[in-house]
Image (cartoon, rainbow, N blue to C red):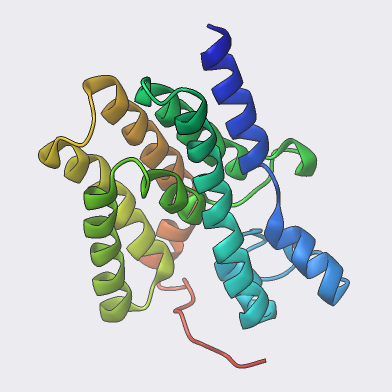
Amino acid sequence: MPSILISAVAGYFLGSIPFGYLLVRTFRGADVRTTGSGNIGATNVARTSPLLGLLTLVLDVLKGMAAVSMALTLWPDTRTLAFVAALAAISGHIFPIWLRFRGGKGVATGLGSFILLTPKAVLLAMAVFVILLAACRFVSLASVTAAVSLPLFTLVLREGSSAQIYMVAISSALIIVKHRANMERVLAGTEPKFKADRK
């Protein structure tokens, strides 16, 4: 029980570091939650500054990797604890205590978390993301489709036990639910398409 608790708590607090919010506040003197979609993730930060958006993406990926790496280092013989840390990190990003539980959507942190645990499944999910983004230019739709595919790829490729795949599925479900408003806008034809503005 202590090891599970440590994995969950440490993963959550690593995931809850709101890099997008901190970067925009530091370098632009603004609250990223008041612009665009109101999200603190890389896509919305990029609407303020592509460079800060890229930096947010990298840092959000790294914090997911850090949470999983911590668990793998402390308990190398119990991989399930690393999946606990991954789920906790994604939850921390989506529901950060520092921002009254109003965070990002978990895609980059999920990528960083699971690339160390289910690398083949993640690479296939990334391919799904890239193909859909190129085809429709909706980051949200590409993200949701990739999230749906990740546990399926993990299952087919046998990159985890039943309990571990279950945690991947819960993580994907959190990401999908956070994109609900985006999906409604996609269906309504009001969701903005991705474009690389230079600012």
